[in-house]
Image (tube, rainbow, N blue to C red; front, top):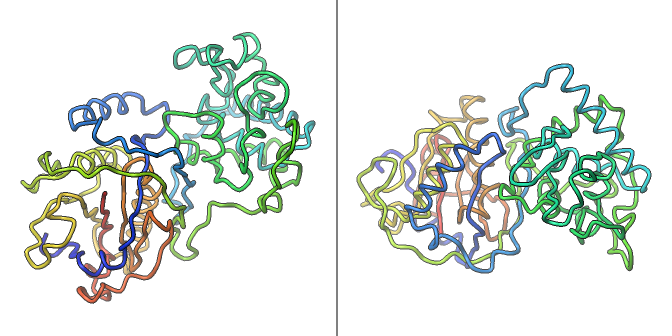
Length: 395
């Protein structure tokens, strides 16, 4: 599209190795259930079966980093009685962790999980037969309803170990201390919304502070686990995998494993260009609109000056931020937020790479590097350097 992203040969030369995607679906929170139903209906119309990749079991997810307070969405404010209950339940959860000798990181993961699943409330209802702080299901082997509604039992079950119930808990997950918080939570919960836990980190930390919980304390991350324990990683010393690019507020990320089958351009571009895009691209647009507040974007374009671009192939979209972000901090925050969301969900949407603010990110490496225009575009120009839009290319 003339005047927008002119990505092409140079970008493709920078990404010559096979990159990988993950599994379908990136929607946040149970409060989004109605939107989730609508999006799944769209997904069916777009050929859901074709979008699901093979070998996606190794997907990794990272919690997004703050970008001028715009990179992460916080929980809605709780009234005083609700917060008092949350603090009380947080103390119970941490009491179990402390009694076991678990590090504070385990408590933080548990609080983020409970905030996503129940808003850290001991509720007696949920999806299907889910109940309690962590929405554990009797039919999945987590215990009886009466047991799960006991906060101490629920916390013990979440942390796992040699004692029943049978589903693996946190200490049963090899390498959990070096995972991102949201990934560790997902390893236990196996949720349909694997990225959703990330958005609760700041609220969990605030509640921990009110409850007098030391989430930085050291401990045995596999306390209560029987048999040989894995060697503890550097997270015990306060290391966090949620690594951010200082000064940009951008996720550093992780390589994304899996294989995305090729797709043909069979769907009319939902951004209204009149062209055709792949079902994967169309689904990404619907998810991006729902998650990011329907930002202006354009996908298909003839790109006559650069036919090797992903735009005429129906595999790329430009999300506009509203101007040159080098001259506007709010626009910079907005672009960071878009880029962070695209990276955080890359393993479930099939994002191959993206370009924003003079940098290019690849799902193969999970990292950013400087974007020099590839010898095709002027990286100092607002459009050529991608300072006025985020370019997203799909598999």
